[in-house]
Length: 483
Image 1 (cartoon, rainbow, N blue to C red):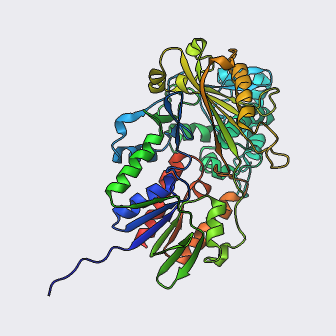
Image 2: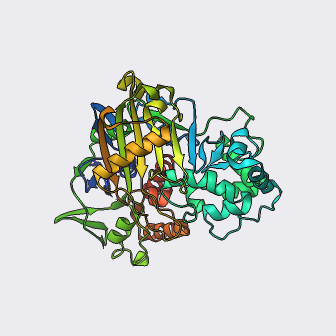
Image 3: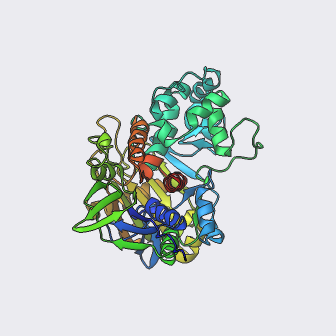
């Protein structure tokens, strides 16, 4: 008597960002019949694209951290290895109330590996560097205990307030759109406190993370890279990763349904039932690849242990892209970009990226004298945990971007020099890793895993950044398919 092949198990992914698309790829590779639901009309989530003045540009993430090989390995699998490019040398800057300074050559979240590096001393002053160097004399119990701590609490205790105000606050504000007093250090810099216990000081832990090593002897003392260079991008933009992922999924027979929002989830004896505006999907395996509040909102009826435990929404971030005819910017006055200290008067942006100064491929595409700059707005402050008032309408943001770009780049930019501009809004998309968030997210994940046939993925539980999301997603889907 002949045998028939086993029918593939069904798997449903809710959310079409990077974590959702990668989840679908891992599930399909494991032999599952996969469907992906995306509420919006575009794939990739925060890794998107838009066209400004004829240039196709990243509308969200434009680089990935290279301290892990997670993204590079994914690119290799998708045939994109030859497209991985480093940023141009030159480094990033920080705008302080008393003027611009180059960011230190080595650092994590702005925390310096050596308080006496010339760039650090110029920013902190001799007394500031002296206070920061006391970190090496303090017992590792200071800031490395089991209690959850904020970025600011750790930095202030180990290195003092000057490091916090002049280096860490601008970097954290630019990257995470929040005051460091609100953020869980174990979420935004995983492994840093453990490294401090292992290496004896915060500076030594930062140095080890920058090298990608785990002990004091793992790596040679090479000349440190410029600030901002521990990243890479893709020729053509990070959005090409999404295009490659989508093409790969279609080739694997994955069903991709855009404009299809899940509205409710319930448990069945043999799996899960998902209602997407009247269309019912029955599935053996379910992956929630949406933001934390949406994931808990959809799952809390089916997984009672997480009811009422929605994490905080991320800040609303506005990204203003300007395409300029401005040959004066050929000299790249602020390297690859500049981060803004919160107390800096007269500047509303939290960061500026000089995209054509950062990526050679984009400079070539733009042509001589034409430049692309991106300014980001929106930051949660440390007093009220609310976003302070700022420019909101497109016209207000455009006017603010012209003023801020002129001030930050020290080159006057007029409206008639703008060849195109666009505003992209990311509403609550950036994970808000508030103090205690890591433990709460882990508890939510444990409850969902215990429900069986269910995984939750995404930046809100993995940590901010493509490298963290890619590595965590693969681990979670591997566990799901194994179970």
